[in-house]
Each structure stands twice: as C-alpha cells, then as structure tokens.
Image (cartoon, rainbow over all chains, first blue to last red; front, side):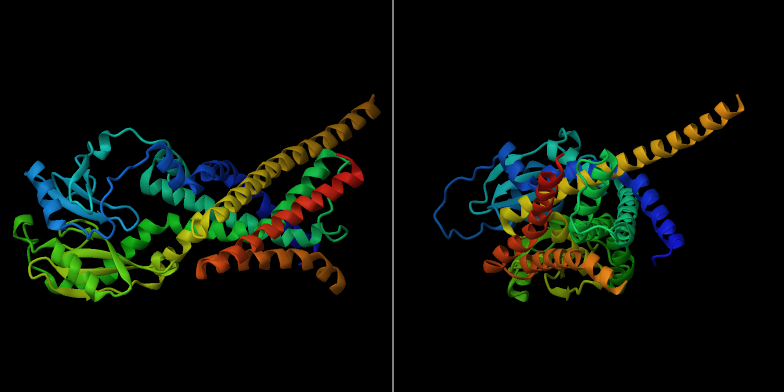
Length: 386
Length: 61
C-alpha cells in the first residue's frame, strides 16, 4: 500500500474524482446549509396559523372534505390525500386527469379538526418557486428532473471515491507528521495542505455517511420504479382485466382510512393515493402509514384497500432497498436529533466547503508549482546556450 | 512500520468512531441519547479547533 506506485495511483484517483465533482459538490454543500433548516425557514417565511379548537377534538370526516373539494371542482379527479400527523391539516390534491405530469394539479388545504376549507391554491405549475424549492432543486436535480438526479448521484459517487482515496492517502502523507500538525509560518501551500488533511480526516466518517446516503436519495426514483415493476406488479397481476372504478362509485375513503388504521396498531396513516394514480394501484386506495416512534416514523408501510369493497387486501412488506432508502433519509438530512444536531450538521457542512475549496486551491498551486519549475529549467537551458 | 501505522491512525480512528456513535445514537435512541449524540459529534470538531489553535500559537499564522 505504501509503495510509491500505489500512492501515485490513489493520488490520481483522489485528484480526478474530486476535480470532476468539486463544483457540483460546492453547490450541493452551499444549498445544503439552508436546507438543514428547511422546516424552520419555511415556517418563518410562510407561517401557518390554525384556528383554536377545544383540545382533543377528533379528526373531521375525510369524505366530507373530499366532497367539498369535488363540489368546487366537479369535473376533476382527486389524486391523493395528505393527512398531516404534525399539523392539523388535510391536503386534497386534484387534477383534470390522472396523468402524473398534469399541468392542472392543484391542492386544497382543510382544517383536519373542523373539516373547513383553509386554502384553495392555484395549480402547482403556476405558483412561483419558493426560495426553499430553488435550493432543493439546485441540491438534488439542477432543475432537470430524473436526469439531473442521476447526474448529481454520479457526482456524489465521485465524491465518495474522493473521500475513500483521501483516507488512503492520509497514511503516507502523515508518516512524518503528528496528528493535527498544521505548518503555519511556512508556505501557504503547506498550511492549506495540512488544514485540508486535518479537516478531511476528522470529518471523514460524516462526509462518507452523508455522501453515500445522498447518492442513495438520488436513486429514489429508479428504486421506486424497480419496486413498481417487480413486487407491485406481481401483487396487482391478479386484478388484471378489471377496470379502475369511477370516483363517484368508489367506497368511502374515511372507511378505508379507519380500517387501515385499525389494521396497523402503532402506526399512523399519513396519505391516501387514489385508484388510477400512477404512483398507486388502478383498483385500490393505497394508504401510506408510518411508525409512531422516532426511528419507526422513518419507515413506511403501504396498504392496499380495495376501492370497490373497502376491504384491506394487502399490507405490503417493503423490499430491503427501499428500507435502506428510508433509513438513509434522516442520516442525510440530519433532522433526527433536535436542533443541536442540525447546527452540528451545518458546521460539518461548512467544514466540507473548506475541504473542497482548499482542494481546488492545492490543485491550482501544485500545477503552478510544476509549471514554474519547468519554465525555470527551460530558462536555465536557454541561458546556457546563449 | 507497525508503530507508525498505529501512531498515524489512532486519533483519526477514535474521531471516526465518535462520529459514527453520534450518528447512530440519535437515530436509535431519544431523549438522553440525543445529548450523547451531540457530544459525540462535537468532539471531532473541538479537536480540530484545538489543534489549529495550538499550531497557530506555536508557529504564528
């Protein structure tokens, strides 16, 4: 491992994997700073107020909220419901068709305790992007959808390679130095080399975990797609030939909600995907429930309720790769240990920015170092000839 | 050779372990474990700040 040849090889990998991804990683790290506090910033920019009601008021009937929404848009279809477990709201999403990219997709917000309409938003397409949405897009897909996600996923993979090769290089680089030796007072290059090494090795595990889980998150679209064409398809194959029920002939969504909630003790149903939605089943209400404990609240369980009969027909077990994706979310976001953990996340993120920037600096000055060295040599030869 | 490997990697290994422990304790526990997690994750950051402070004081900027 310590032969000069293998050090050169690792160095080549470290240099090129970082150089290719650095600019994108800088954007990711910078946009990541506000994203750590996305929830707080969102609440601050766009505060939501709910009317006071008596404590312990039970949830209003979902059917009545859906009916109100349908009454306002009689020609449209309900595509999904979001039953917030954090704030007292139910969001009904509607569109003229079930196409996932329908330009008319819009949502209505209801007070979940009184069932009264709070807000009727214009279509998503016509709403200006919020600051947080712009940050998120720069962070995850560069406004390019799936291709952007895959591209940034690839950049993340290069970042992981540069971390691993950086850890390997740390050994030979530090052979004659004590941990944390920073050679201030010598050349600026040595100072930044030492700072790069110290910050890099001290934060290496955080960088690796956040890097790997970031790549994992970028793969969420293909992973869900894989699940849909394998497990979900097998599950739905036995209904082949049946038609999607029309919305006014479907069973009660409130009943589907209540039955599923009974079926899954210790869990909370947070959304209902309507039959015909591309992200659901053509024949069922698909209900997503999550656990009530801090860790299990990161794990989701989908349940299929027959939209005609109202019977629970399957509580689906998620495949390992989607479980891994679910666990990788909090580990990437840093939103699972109170606000101090978020502050720690921000500090590590700033350290990552310093590591990236010093890496570019070291590359530039090293190049300059060699170029100057060679011109010096050439000048000497030229002078000798004269 | 063996000695220098140990010498090089002892502190980085401990810091890495501390971060890993911090990441997992907040994920799997709550309340008390949150505090443990914050402490475990702040340690490597404090070590970096301390090392830079010491190096600066000894060698100027």
